Amino acid sequence: MKTVITAANAPAALGPYSHAVAAGDLLYTSGQIGLDPVTGKLVGDSIEAQTEQVLRNLEQVLSANGMTFANVVKTTVFLTDLADFATVNGIYATRFPADPPARSCVQVAALPAGARIEIELVAAK
Image 1 (tube, one colour):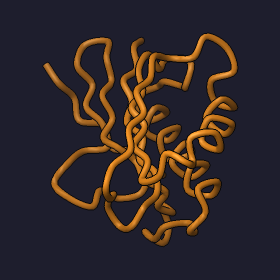
Image 2: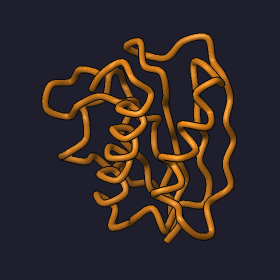
Image 3: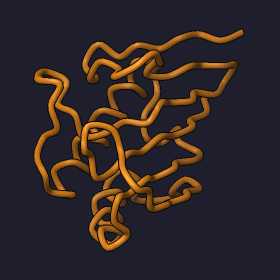
């Protein structure tokens, strides 16, 4: 059985998808980009600002299912430029200071709304 999770303090979906779906003890999030939940616009052009906002958005989605970053077991990071990899790693590490989850990181041609980064994750209770 699945439960659709909607986070009140995360940006509205840009298409026909849910913030996340819980199935048993697992939570699968949709990818989050650096949209401000109030304005619905990207928080800025910098990879630093967008990465911070992506992580804040994911934190809200996790929280809507009673979880934190400590529950995350796998992430996938999508970057439009792998030259941003080191910068993203530095910010990402602040949310996973010990025992980080498994992760994949890939460069993509483009992301929705002109974003530079998107992250999706899987968390377990």
